[in-house]
Image: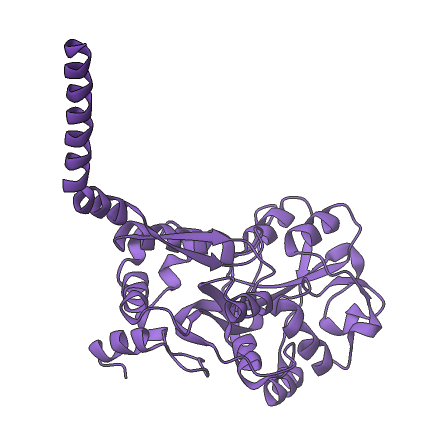
Length: 329
């Protein structure tokens, strides 16, 4: 009996000791748990066949590697219009979007029924080049030739779809003049390869991977934006600027295309307005100062000197802090 009591007391003593040790250590282990638990940020980009998604992923990797306690996860989306809405609803923390789409949201026009102002700019990522391509066999040579043709003006919710009607209008056309297919650019390219679509538009960097892919299968025509039509476009859509895609950027069966005259906007990084100031400071600083670590061909176009170009919405205080340090504000 005594032996049983002794064993019982020993067990109780061990349990008490274990609890005491556990009580001594929660701050340290709890601290370790807190340190290992990262702040997860959602970065809405665009379609997988465009530039936003792969470039966004490359930038997110650099942020995650250089900002302690932060993990940035990229999500594909319908691009600019959808991205601003995702920011507004709190479903995304960071997005890339075209500067004209952000301005539309800010003012409550275009694709937005009312003003959205609970987001802030961080800075320009790269120039967004509007590129319209058509199958050569379709007979399309200019934008005006799109009348009656099968055309993909951009997927619903994208900056491309919100921009192309302005271009068509400058050439005396509307979406009603063509057979419209609201495909993603990747799907549009596949349809063009199969002869199911005549032309498609996208707002991407050059060279665009999907266009390069299309050129492996089909000869195409680039629809240029020049002359009086360019002037008309700029009068109604002042954020666009003339842009030349240099000769040799694209080629078909070894034959390079000459200079391609079009227009460009800006791809800008935007965040929730309530995102921490120091965090946004780090987002800006790392994006512009660690471009060499960004694993994407567009990294050379991410330039601090272009950070403020064409941004008409308010900047985030964290970004302002960074630009003031650099003497830019």
